[in-house]
Each structure stands twice: as C-alpha cells, then as structure tokens.
Amino acid sequence: GLIALDTLKKAHAEGIKPMGPVIKVLVWARKDIRIKRIQEREGGMSLKDVRELTRNREEGDLEYWKSLYPWMGDINPLEKGARDAEGRRIYDFEIDSSDLTVQETSQELHDFLEPLGLVEEKRDLFLGYQRPINSN
Image 1 (cartoon, rainbow, N blue to C red):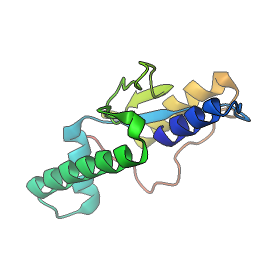
Image 2: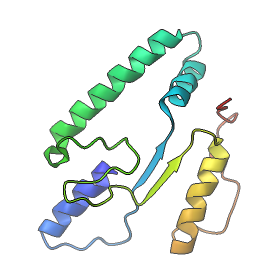
Image 3: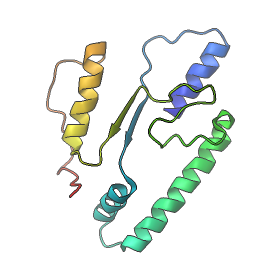
C-alpha cells in the first residue's frame, strides 16, 4: 500500500496518469492471532519470544518505512482505517483475516476485485499452501 501510494503521489505531482488501476490492499489480523500464527509457523519458539520478535519487527518496519516515506509522519500503515496526511484512506480494501483461512481471505479479495474487472471468474484460490493456517 505504501509503495503504491507513494508512486501515485509522485506521479500526480509530475502530472502522470497511471497506466491502469492501482488497488491498495491491507490484510491484517489481531495481534494475538498474528503471534499465534508466527509461533505455529516458527515451531518451538516461546510465546514470550514471539511477542518480542513481533514487537521488534513492527517497530523496525515503521522506522524503516518512515525513512522511505517521510510524508507518513505518525501514520501507522498497519492499522485498519489508516489515512494519509490529507485524510484519505491508504487502502482501497482492508480485510481482517483473524478468523479466516487463507482460502477465505483470498476469496474475499477476489470478491472485491471481480466487480472491478480486475480478476477472472472464481477459481481455486488456495495459492499453493500445503495446509490452511489455522486461527483456532
């Protein structure tokens, strides 16, 4: 979303129109769910270590993004409903994947994009994962 927004801002400032649609998407999950998923994926890490890893990564990512995109100011682009400095929503589509499988999340995105003519008819959207990421 940030790369697309920054590119659009620069293009607009230079009077350049995008060659096609630009859709900015945020897939997010509640922090407790993200921590549990990371713990499952990493296998063997303690909950305390995963929490610390997650906190450090989020802080590092925000610091890095702010260095790349100074216009961000105090905006946290990982929060749902995030808005840019002019008050415009950063993302065109946001989905809370906390209680969804990978397939369900993919289907929600597909259902958003299909009426816009940006994807073809519904197909198997499993995306090659060997197993669904469980949020239970």
